[in-house]
Structures are given as structure tokens and as C-alpha cells.
Amino acid sequence: MHTKTLKELSALLQARKISATELATLYLGRIAHSDLNAFLHVDEALTLKQAALADQRIARNDTTPLTGVPIAHKDIFVTRDWRATAGSKMLENYVSPFDAAVVERFNQAGTVTLGKLNCDEFAMGGSNENSAFGPVKNPWDKAAIPGGSSGGSAASVAARLTPCATATDTGGSIRQPASLCGVTGIKPTYGRVSRFGMIAFASSLDQGGPIAKTAEDCALLLNAMAGFDERDSTSIERPAEDFSAGLTRDIKGLRIGVPREYFGPGLAPDVEQAVRAALSEYEKLGAVLVDISLPKTELSIPVYYVLAPAEASSNLSRFDGVRYGHRARNYTDLSDMYMQTRAEGFGDEVKRRILVGAYVLSHGYYDAYYLQAQKIRRLIAEDFKSAFEQCDVIMGPVSPSVAWNIGDKADDPVANYLADIFTLSTSLAGLPGMSIPCGFGQGARNGRLPVGLQLIGNYFEEAKLLNIAHRYQQATDWHLRQPEQA
Ligand code: GLN
Image (tube, rainbow, N blue to C red; front, side):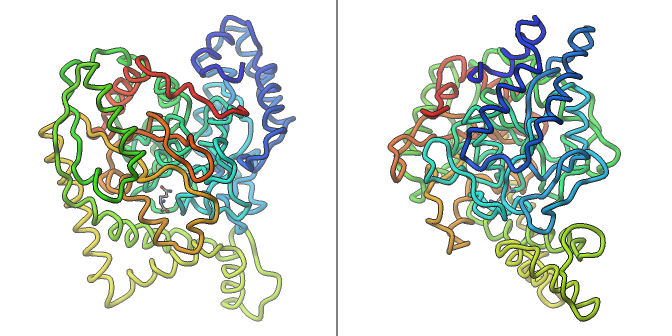
């Protein structure tokens, strides 16, 4: 049962071949036996209560395609009934008085929450080693990282601990862990999914999206997740779209832009091989490859690592020990209380980013760093604009290598930042991007670690990306491969 896709589970629920309660019980059992550290909070009674409500809805035929379907949420989405820690000691025991818009939407659709998923602290990271609650293990090789920051989301779907999960992507955190764990994830266009109740990292970049086994499942999830929300000032008002409607559309003649800069010396040969094989598969499906250039790719790293920390330093100033979260026990006066609280509550990577952010925003450096980075951000978006005059979709690798071992890059923040090279520019431009499983590479210990293919679309072309991904998944079975123990 746990190997079934969300679409299949939905059909079984609607046909009453299985109940939401049975399904929730099955997954709770799998979670209880897992040692991946993917889940931070599980509350069986709460889950079963939601499942019972879903069963009542099914009994009275008041359903959506997601009613009774189990889901787990990245712990960056606030939840009324569950703690929301954002992977930080600062929020270790925090319970929000309201649900995030995304959680609210899924609750309305009738999903059953299995729990909250581990992630890098405040979503800062690409390996999940920055969680205050310990790293998540990659189900393909438990010595390896699952990717981050949505490592719990990707690992739990890969290990079949949940059929689907929510995640967020600021500079790659949906696509990169999806790639390293061999599952499917989509980061929508900035503004598509409400940020209300998503604990903020870098507000001009943060965007929620789903992770599941297939593109078809991601479409179903996005149908529930996306939509205008007046409580988020950057939410975009557009007519509702059915992301499942055009999945099987023919892709003959599709022009796939292959950016030169994504296949340089920094790309591991095994990843390149898997990605090139996927491109050939697309040619067989009738697509044509177009050589394109995204010349500013290299600048995305310095630009992102100026802008994201700048926004983070501002967003995280709310954690002062007064309003919510951790407060130091011992202090002499108010400002000492702020300092002790923040010193104790934040981890190293978060502190590093606050320092960098405060620096680039400070008088005298603002023009040299922050403003300069904003200007280059615009140029990066222009790169994509010209590219989309020559092609319909852009494809390349997600990550320059397969998953590395836990600890391997732990002492070298820059090595971690460099691994974001293929995902950051999409986020800086606000474009939608996907990762779909496309093969395996050579891991340090295990010869079979997943490789993801990245699909980048023009603004609001999620439906097109899902269609292109679905056609590939109809022709191949990489997305159905699962780790041995799952
Ligand atoms: N790895 C990037 C970072 O560390 C992206 C994280 C994200 O998308 N949340 O900031």
C-alpha cells in the first residue's frame, strides 16, 4: 500500500477500498519504525482524529481528490495543533495560534497530517545538517545527507513514510533534496503559494511547494496549495488553474534549452551522464534540444548569499526573547536578555547569516553589496528572459553531484553554498522549477544514489512543467525506484 502514488490512494479512498484511518495507521507504523530522523513531531491521536473526520467526509460524499490522503508538513509551516520549530532551538516548544495558509488549504481539502518534518534551521542550508534537532539521513544511504533544507520532506517521501509532503524553496530547497532523494518536487512561480504562516527566511525568495513520487501527484497537491491570499502581500491574484488537466498533452516539437553554463567542469560526470540520458529520452519523445546560454549563472552564488542573509537578518530580528520562542534564563538587563537569548537560540549557520546580512545592509556597505546584488539579480532574470525567446523550457542538473556524506562539508560553509549553483538563479528570477528523478550516480559508499533532472519554466508555467515531467514519467520508471528498505 505504501508504494502507491497519491493518485492511486485517492482512488482507493473514494472507492472505499481503504479508509483514511487504516491508511493513517499504516503510515504512522512506518514512521514509528524509521530511524531517518525525518519527523520532528508525531501525535498519533491528533492524526487519527483527522483521519476519522476524513472518513466521515467520505461517508457523506463530501470529498476532494485529497480527502483522507496522508500528508506531512515541513516544520517551517506554522500549525495550531502541532509545534512549529523551523528546525531551531529558538522555537523548540513553539505552538502557533493559527495554521499557515498552506496547512489551512490542505485541511480544508481533507488531508490527514502525519506530523511535522525536520529541516535546516530556518531553511538555511542544503544538507539538513543545520537542524538543531540533528541531521536527516538519506534513505538510499544512511551515511549520506538527504539534501536541504527540506530534507525531512524529501527523505520521508523517498522512504515511503508519507505519500507526499509540503516543502519550501528559497534557493533550491525543494528541488535539491528531491533530486538527492530520488523524488519529484516543484517550486512554483514566486507568489503562487501563500507565504502566510510560512516562517520567513528571505521573503522575496521563499516559496512553498509539494514533494511527492510523481509529477501527477504534485499537480494534485498544487491544485490545493496554490491560490491568492490577501494575507500575503506578495501573493499573486490569478484565476484558479487545474494543474492536472493538461498532463498528457503531447510534447512533440518542444524546444528544450540546455544552458552551456550548467555543464561545466564543476559538474560530476555521473550526474552529467544521467542528465544527458534524460535529454536523449526527451528527444525520443519528440523534443528538440537548443543550445542556450545563461551567462550570469556564476554570479547567482554571491548575489544570493548577499540578498538572502540581508533579508534573513531583518526577518529574524523578531526572535528577541520577548514575543515568542526561547528566552535566556540568566541576564542582567534588557539588551543582555536579547543577546543571551539569540546566542543560545540560534545555531552557527543562522548566526553567520545574520552577521553577513547586517553587514551588507549597514551604512557604507549597502551600496557596495546589497544594492549591487539587487542590480545583478535583475540581470539574472534578464538572462532567462532572453533564453525563453529561444526555448520553451530549460533543462539541466539540479545538484552538481549526488548526495555527499553527512559531515563531509560541515566545516566549510562555502563548499555548501557552491553546491547551490544550479538552483539559485531560478529563485532569484522568481521562476518555477522542478526536479524529477532521472537516474543514479556513484555515491561515496553506495553505488546508487539518485540524480535529479531540473526543469525550469517561464513565469506561471507550472502546468507546462508538470506536463513535460509527466510525459517523461510515463516513458521511464526512475520515479518509481525506491530505496531497499522502503
Ligand atoms: N541552500 C540554500 C541556502 O542555504 C537554499 C536554501 C533554501 O532554499 N531554503 O540558503
